[in-house]
Length: 109
Length: 114
Image (cartoon, rainbow over all chains, first blue to last red; front, side, top):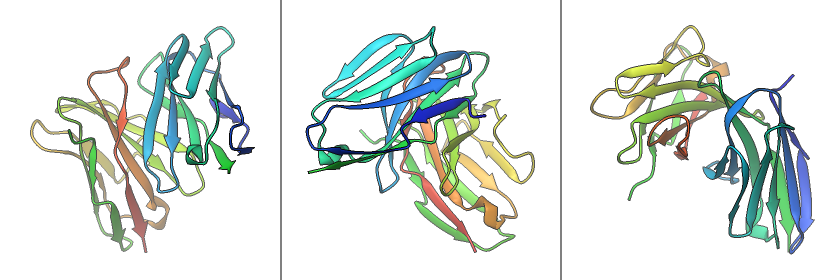
């Protein structure tokens, strides 16, 4: 069983749609990260959060520590948002990181 | 304001050779993490280092793999006697400090073992 589960695995949306990607984890964590990996392979850190909610532009990330669940929302989606979105958690008992397998998002014009 | 740099970006090695991957963290960052992404798989944590110290290597294979982050110079991930299964993308990330600081990722090194 994976420590981090993401859903959906694949997502296709029309430009302008509101998108939600979900992440559930099974370990105690000190922080949760949302990462974006573009087709070329480069990885960008979008958010690091340990509680509540963060917003950056059209991106919003929320976390519910009690439910061990986080969501990444994209408002007014755009084709340039097409990428793989990865949820990662840092275990609170050490330095171990666990990664979800990613959600592949395609936004169609 | 250079970000995290990794070189080489692409590395081809024959089975049995050694691979050396380099990571230069962002300026002022003293913490480095190495991750591996196998084809069609997710990222896996390998090792966490501070300058001159290995903090956590629980994700490193027990044999053939080693990592260092010397006082001067880049962090090095070394793979001895490479095998086809080592073919993957290797990413490093750096942070200002430990647990509660954002990580910044390098562009990755794509290792192909022939």
